[in-house]
Amino acid sequence: MPQPVIDVQGVSKRFGERILFENVSFSIAERQKVGLIARNGTGKSTLLSMIAGVESLDSGSVIFRNGIRVGYLSQESLFDENETVLDACFNHNNEDEKILKAKQILTKLKIANLDQRMGSLSGGQQKRVALANVLITEPDLLILDEPTNHLDIEMIEWLEGFLSRGTQALLMVTHDRFFLDRICSVIIELDDRQIYTYRGNYSYYLEKRQERLDNRRAEMERCMNLYRTELEWMRRMPQARGHKAKYREDAFWELKDRVTRRIEERQMKLKLFNVYIGSKIFESQYVSKSFDEKVILKDFYYNFARYEKMGIVGNNGTGKSTFIKLLLGLVPPDDGRFVIGETVKFGYFSQEGLHFNDQQKVIDVVKAIAEYIDVGKGKHLSASQFLQYFLFSPEQQYDYVYKLSGGEKRKLYLCTVLMRHPNFLILDEPTNDLDIDTLQVLEEYLEDFPGCVIVVSHDRYFTDKIVDHLLVFHGDGDIQDFPGNYTQYREYEKLQVKESSTEQKQRPAREKPKTEKRKLSFKEKREFELLERDIEALETEQKQIEEALSSPNLAVDKIVEMSKRLPVLKEELDEKSMRWLELSEFV
Image 1: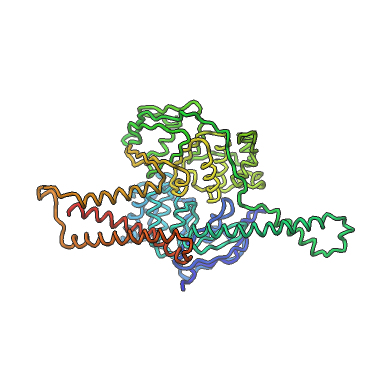
Image 2: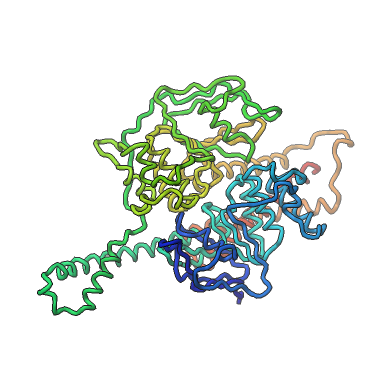
């Protein structure tokens, strides 16, 4: 039976009068992959920092197995500006094997110039170096706080495979639900200052969490009925209840506290009826843009449709954010132009975000934009109601901005964008630092939004739920127009590779000079035959697992086992398909 690598016992933390969590306990076994889920501001990052020994405990203890090595990735990365990338990433005795591993991981994370000074890197690049630094040390326990921030989709998929194949235990906070689902076999949720443990992946967690909430609502209904009868009794004159037992009066106040505690789940469904946008949205008329030798757009034409919800995906540095700034007029094109419809009113959520006055109260930040938002049909939502929709409790609304966590500030910034009542939303990496509950609220908002939306995001789950169309930025001005979401695009890519492979197999060999084409060696021929057999077997296994996971009767241990196997299988299939393509050139 796997032994625990870490045991968290009765840990508590508070800041002033605010209690983040109290008497929290859980353990992580060797090789176990655990995801931590909680709302912004409830102490996820603080808990990871405490476990890693960076922040002190108010009470309780964190016990590590003897001799265990721990790697910790925080959201803040601090480096010596004058160090080279390689020195910052590995400066322990210059072991050749470690240096080679460092170079391999940095290459996968698209840090190419290892002699570059850390001070010249962007914040996102520094975060990737910090991630590489943690992975290279090969710890027994990895503690990762939002590891997918500043990674593009290609890097995220590589990291998925790396962590899935790894033997180390893992404790991770991430908002990327595909990433969470494919890696973690245990989910722990920090809710209402307590820990709830779900022994399955993210899909299993969603199912069991709903059961817990349904039971909680049933209990609340029972409490409400009891509350009404007790309220009648408490309202009697003191003389009428003077002979009643003191314990009954105390029990009432306890019951009232339970009943009036706000259920954390959002009850309100927000619909905007009066957003109007005309039929002319925008037209990109053969726009070109370059920075020195780097081409972003090249004679790009596109006519954006009314009510369209578009996703923009691609590797970092391919020009996604620049495209948005061109559309908004923040960056001028070299050639061509954007023609914007007269009724279009942009709402822009940028990566840089809004700089708040820390001494303002949350409610005042939003009220400075608008006292209420018109939802049509003569109905209005106040600034307070709108904030509550996005999970700012009435108490939080009267907190000062400086008390907010990084994720809560991002959420407040999102509210300030939406309160301006735009009819065309442009969201550049909106999911960074937002908790999953807020992402679910935002997804519902965008699904119901009766205007236009452009989303730039590396969050595949979020993109799949929102968009019905993609622009895929391949770099060097190559932009692919794809009519579907990200998962459909990936399936299309795989189909293209498969069809290309079949076509090459069936294509009759052309007569070529002997110097143009070498023949396969006996060993390569044998490898080629085995690859064909392996690929067919892997495709069959993949289909069987996907069908099994769709079954409602699958046992939990099988769900966990298959969920862990699927990403490993897909990566193996991709590798063998690419090798088959290489060898097929010489068949």
